[in-house]
Length: 282
Image 1: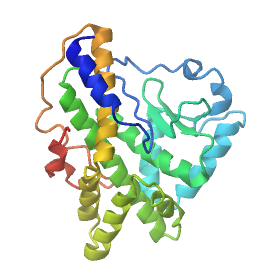
Image 2: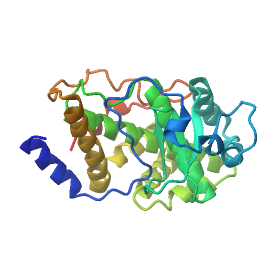
Image 3: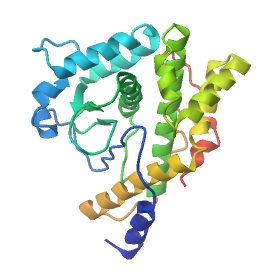
């Protein structure tokens, strides 16, 4: 590893990682590997494919309860689940000790949640990661074709969209008489400000699109969030450069790259690509 790369990694390590959910960066990932035993040797018990006939296992029981809870928000829940079903995402329980709450690993097409979480924490993580599934399906993946700064910028944008979408989903459930998920989001210390901004904007304007955009912008207001996601992205980018023996690209993302990021299930675009915040990479 070059001296410059070493210095960047050292700077990244100055920040501690403790995120809402884990970010799995796969700059060199190939096509999806459907062998779940490579993901976890106990995948038969720990993973569930909705809509398939399988022997009842731990994962089926956990995820069916989650799907039942979010079902009253038919439009948003159906859109997320329909996309996951088409992609044949495996819903899995993570029981290994690595400190993560949940993640979507598109190498194995696995959406995983920590077994020790409370029920509503699990619901929050599932919605969060299902939005990531949609994003990956739209082409938002890490790539060494672009500069590290641009990949950090993309990481910020997809996380900001996921969090804005999550509070929007929780708000809609609350309006339908299920406030527990909303209350849970307010318990995530490092992220509650996004829910607060969304709620305040909704109360003032009654405009979902405007409120979503303000929630998206609010994600960037936390130096802690930016530092943590910057760390994960830059370290993985540098590791991937070393592994591939490639030279860092200085290519920037196309001007229209984010135009399709923040589209809602009904086709509306809340316009995150037009914000100043989406240009940030530090």
